[in-house]
Length: 79
Image (cartoon, rainbow, N blue to C red; front, top):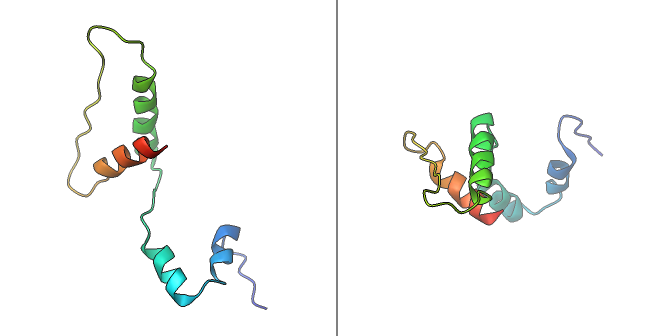
């Protein structure tokens, strides 16, 4: 049996899947928690727990296309 010390255990478990299952796993959407993304997620959490006031604070996220702005929102709402 071949060992893969460079791989994490959850990935090693995927090696036993069929080719079709591995392809589907690879094509899945992924979340990469970059430091700025984690900072934005923390700020969104803070905003959700902010007490109700007349002028509620908000957050504007600006970035180029395909930088993950929509993915941030989707991930936030699914947690």
